[in-house]
Amino acid sequence: MTDDAPELRASDADRERVAEVLRDALAEGRLDMTEFEERLEATYSARTYGELAPITRDLPVGEVAAAPRVSMTKEPARSGGWAGRITGGEGSSTWAVAVMSGFQRKGRWTVPRRFNSFAFWGGGDIDLREADFAAGEVVINCVAIMGGMNVIVPPGVEVVVRGIGFMGGFDHREEGVPGDPGAPRVVVTGFAFWGGVGVERKVTRAERQRLKEERRQEKLERKAAQRELRSSVREDVADAHRRMLEGHRDLVREHHEARREQRELRREDRELRRDDRDRRRRGED
Image (tube, rainbow, N blue to C red; front, side, top):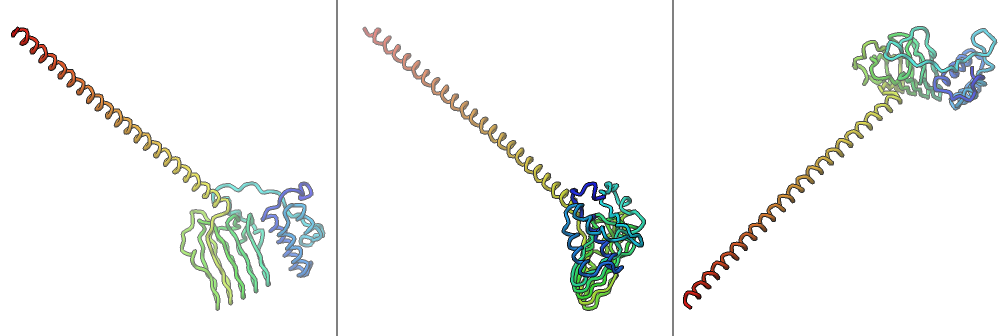
């Protein structure tokens, strides 16, 4: 319970569990609308378990007069794959209402077989990206009167839209995308009057961060490969330049040697002519 560790940070799922208790209390008449709104605002602004615990301390669960034990224990990490996310049983939240206000369902929660939502001059977000599912097929029933709702599903989930719009509409863009083997099927139904129900497919924040990190790593690897290529090109150019200089020096050396040989030949020729002249002079004498 929260009394054991009131300083721990609360998650979105923790706040959502407390909000569900408040909604039940409102439906049973234990809270009026003003108290409900005040406590709901306090719930969504709470950061720690210690701030969440007092919000439901005076509310019973069902017919029992004891304070509800809203679980704040961190759940174990789910097993990989869709099989670990279709849990069976009941949903952790079965309905949501927004009258000139808004609601959210997101984070770790269990989607029931049928989730009913209503928005009048308000809006709501139903985020299934990190949710578990009570069954392989779940129904999200949305009634939007001069309001709007948005259903967010993760990649791999099959979506079927069966809602009716009157001066409003339902988003059908995500229909027709095949689901992954073993993935749940989400059926969006309901009615929209002067309002709309959107359906979009997004990856989770953690998955988005993972993909971003992968792209960053790929970019770093490409840069490293480019640096290695440039370094190799520089080495090749330097080697070619060095060979060219060595070849040029060899040519210069050969040219100098050839000129030196020519000078030697001319000197020897001059000496021979001089010796020949000397002999002719001695013969005349």
